[in-house]
Length: 241
Image (tube, rainbow, N blue to C red; front, side, top):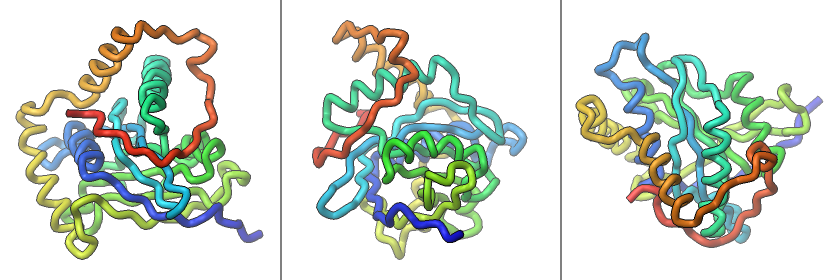
């Protein structure tokens, strides 16, 4: 049986959002670190969908957690954090347009586990995307990221997937690999030396501050509840200053 694809869309990534992803991956897997110590990272892609152009606009990338070299476990504390983040971005008429994770040295693809994870996004939002980042592609002179979407989520874990065309703010397509490489090698030394504060800790600090200002406490029954998300044509500024 031939699967019917759910649609082909173009993704635009704000430069600041992409930079967050590069920093997050470099903090847990970089060329100066022993390969056995590399860890995968996981984060949310925040933005909106322009219903006129059908473009998915990623305005921010929010680092959540990291795991082992071959996977990331989402724990209860991360579900709680994601619930508060969902409320924060909703204030600006935005939502989770997808997620990103790294495959340090493993290549750009969706594993069976990744497909299961992405079903949780794309069943709710047919246009949801999954981004994969592998910094080792840079030394192979290949793009270190690829964005995927399931062909048909109704097939569940048996669904195939396809790549989505994307553009990164401030980076011309014909110069993409060269500029991303420069960005990565600019960021990597600061990650190695610890000059950049843990980007995951920064997220938690911002969320705690937001919670304190609004005195919001989520009821336990809502922590694991999936909410329907809608795209609204309004931009949200960078999560990190």
